[in-house]
Image (cartoon, rainbow, N blue to C red; front, side, top):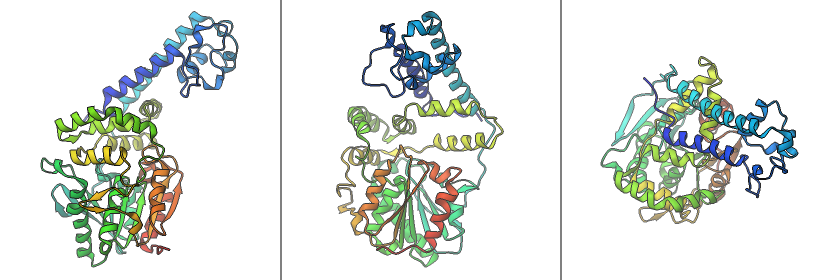
Length: 426
């Protein structure tokens, strides 16, 4: 089987070409200074005021000419032969694209396939299933995001939130599944009242215990609702990179969302859902150079290496997304990100306001220190809104905190231990 990722591949190819064109046309660094004038317009000026800010293409070109970055501190016409320099820039840009394509092709043809089997469902509700990972401790229900496959919490045997939790608790995973035609009309209320709360009730029926509730990313935001509305079903709450203040460190994204809203409305109306490629494009906009960096690095790895196989496993999950029901997509994009409804206490499930200040159970949040998807300040706002909630900051990223090489020690093990004996709220 040949993979078709990274999705959407045409967008990533176009972005790589655009970055190279911009670097060659303006000799721009990754973080340009205030002046946008090209140094090539003035041969008496240095190529860039600070040689350390040279763009990646310029750095490659300089190395190809055997030049130190310091050479660019003086007049560029004296430091370099202009014709040779421009030839080197063009060559460096071409090499950058070729390295990216080589990494993509290596990924698409890689023989690794994830073969970790999930437990069979013990309960079904529409597209959603409940999977029992076993264990003999207190019951705990894990809730992932709606827009990615649930197996990110069980990606590999040595990087599994679920298998670590089963050593300390009786662990269950709510797998939302992929919305069918009927579920494409679901709202957040439908998912909370019609799926999440019934799943909690089922776990309580199966175990005879009021479960702990653990939410990751968007699943953490959704998990706040039953903790507020049905405290009889939630004995403790754990949050992993759960966004709440959607205006935190997001001004550029909000501007882009406002400009894109007419187009997004048309696409949602036409498809009835936010497609996987649309969602991936929105995530890519948070860091347009990330995919290129990742795949150029992957091109340098030995295919049989552990690092290469881990990369493929994670990329396969990223490209195996789930469409988001149209009404939920509108609620998240325009109500959460556009109006910051949760942080303003304006988010409702049905006619009920979701106020985290009403949560009385023990609560612990894990905040990744380097998270572009959920800025730490967004997740910390939820901690601050829950009385007595505690927080732990971990030096990992949004996905790394649940599936990275350091996740077991930093998150999985302390989370499982806390779930077995959660500290009471102050």
